[in-house]
Each structure stands twice: as structure tokens, then as C-alpha cells.
Amino acid sequence: MTTYTLQHPDKGLISYTDKKRYLWIASVIMPIFPMLGIFCYYQTGSQWALAIPLVFTYLVIPVLDWLFGSDENNPPEEIVPQLEEDRYYRILTYITVPMHFGVLIAIAWFVGTHELTIWSVIAMALTAGSYSGLGINTAHELGHKKPPFERLLAKLVLAVPAYGHFCIEHNRGHHTHVATPGDPASSRMGESIYKFIWREIPGAFKRGWEQEKVRLNRLDKSVWSLDNDILQSFAISAVLQGGLIIAFGWIMLPFLALHNFWAWFQLTSANYIEHYGLKRDKDANGRYERCQPHHSWNANYIFSNIVLFHLERHSDHHANPTRRYQSLRNFEDLPELPNGYYGMYLLAYVPWLWYRVMDKRVLALPHINGDLSRVNIDPDCREAIVAKYGQGELVAA
Image 1 (cartoon, one colour):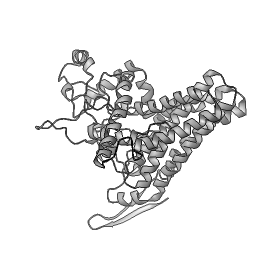
Image 2 (cartoon, one colour):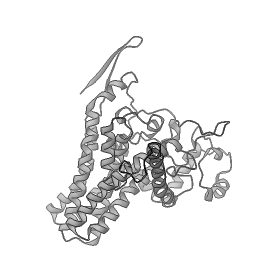
Image 3 (tube, helix red, strand yellow):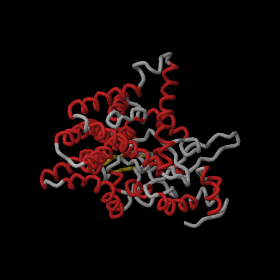
Image 4 (spheres, helix red, strand yellow):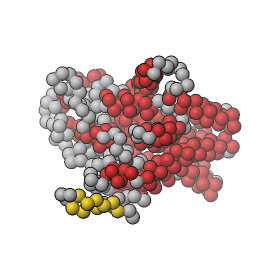
């Protein structure tokens, strides 16, 4: 186990050991987990075995988060430069990129060469999509970094679920407008995930395209030029998915359509739970305040964090977007989710239950303290929410 040390002029010897150093390998293993369903199918001959990865992701992981609990440990700030320079952590993200390509191709081969029921094809498409959604998470980590190689890897892995606009939209759009009513990637109190998706997916693509057009115009280039990063990623998607259709036939059309949608929906699910109801205040000039840790919902659950490259420490990520996953911090008095991301996804998929659990949590946050004027509310639901909670009324947790 690697220990980082520093002799500080005032604090003396500072040392830090990342106890999760080798647990981060789980983030590399997670993208190939769908292959377990295929392995179990060959062992048992039962197509029910193909659902094992879905059951693990959406049912077992939330239970493991509950069992293993949270880790609120932070690396000392003086040690962070050493921690971020350790290439071990970067290599783990690099390794996952080709794995996402390999897993999609393997599952497509399985679907295209075996006699499966329609339900099994759907299960395999959802499985492939949920794990290609992890590819967007990998791109999220890589795309925030300055080295061109890491940004190239982000562009490549986004080709797997055909979501090539993500890093552009996310970095230049979402991080600028996060936790504001106009951000399509920030959900509003009272807005169901099924309503949110109609703002988030088209809104993100539109904003990403506009941002790339602005960049290319500054270089005096056409948005349709070969220098368009979005088109480059989509071109790789066309080659990859077009090749699968040619290789394995018409069954790939519905398979890939469902795969792509479900991968996109995993990002929609993450965006939905990460900023629900949170809103930045405006200053005297009408400008939104700088994004603070309390403008994102945080989660410190051990298991889901080690398989998601610490995505759930989202509060520090938005406050410090270039900080690498192994260095992300927990803070006191943050908006805290009651389970890890996969458990919260399930909750979000049942809107009435989501509202019951989360709305009072929003209003009980210290910086909101029951003041609905400080909440990002769905305009269509404002009247009902004000009638239920009362403008400015303190709501207990």
C-alpha cells in the first residue's frame, strides 16, 4: 500500500495512505460485469441468467451501499498534488475505454448469433446500455482533464453509446449553468424524471452543438468541418454500430436503439438526482453566485463510489471540476442522498416515492431552511408546492 508523505514547515510530517487504492480496480471490473450473465447462461442454459447483471446493478448494489455504509475520509490537502500525480489512478481510467468497446461488441455478437426470446434481447440491450452508461462516466472523468490524450479517450468512449456531445455540453454548458432554472441538466423540485428527460436529452444536445459551433467560429471554421469534436465522435459511433449491423443483421437495429437510449437514460438519471431542487442565489447584479458544494447532492457510499470513480462526491466535483476522482473531498453539512446512485435511480423511477423522500430533504437543507424562493421549482408545480409547504415555512427533515 502506497503512503504519501510531506514534511510541512508548520505541521511537521504529513502522511496519507489511500485505503481504497486497490478497491478502485472495481471501477475497471464493473464495465465487464455484463459478461457474467453470458457466462451463467452457458453454465445453466437458462436465459434468465442473462438478467443477472441488471439485478446486481439495480438491486444488489443499493443493498451493498447500505451494508458497507459511507466513507467520509479526505486526503490532506498538502498531499493532494502527490496523489494526483500518481499515474496508477489515471491508468485505471485508461483501461476502461477499450473495455467498453469490447463488451458492446461481445454482447452484440451474442445477441446476433443465438436464438433468444424477445425478452432476452431486451434484457441484453438494457444490460449493454447500463454499462455503456458507465462509459459516459469514464468520459466524465477524462473529459475534465487538461492532457489531450485524456480528452481523446473521452471522445472515443463516448462513441460507444453515441453520445459524442457530452463533454462539450457538460464542461462548457452544465458546469456554467448548473443549479439554475435554465439548465436542462438540473432537475427542478416537482419535476418527474419522465418529464425531465424531455428537457435534458434534447437540451443537452442543442447546447453542446451550439458550444462547439461557437468554438469553431472563433477558429474561422465551419461547424460541419472535420475539426468538429462532436462529429468526430459520432463518426466513430457510425463505424462501430454500422459494423455491428452489417455483421449481425437486422436484430442489431432494435438492440442498438434500446442500448443507446438506456445508456443516455443512465446519464439522465444521474443528472436528475445530482441537483434536484437546488438553486444558486443571484447577487445584486443579477448574476448567479459561484457554484458551491451545497449546490449538488453528495453521497459517500463506499461500494457505488468505488465502481463509479467517485462520481458520487459530486459536490466537490462541481466546486473543483478538474480535481481527479481519488482526491475528491467530503464536506460538512452537504446535501446528502439517502443511498448511492443506483438506489436513488430506482427511487426516481417511482416519482411519488421520490417526492416523498426528497422534497422535505430539499427544504430542510441549512441554506434553504424552508424558503421556497431558494429552491429550483418546476413552474408547472409551483402552485401545488407552495400550497403544500407554504412559502418560507420551515420544514423539518
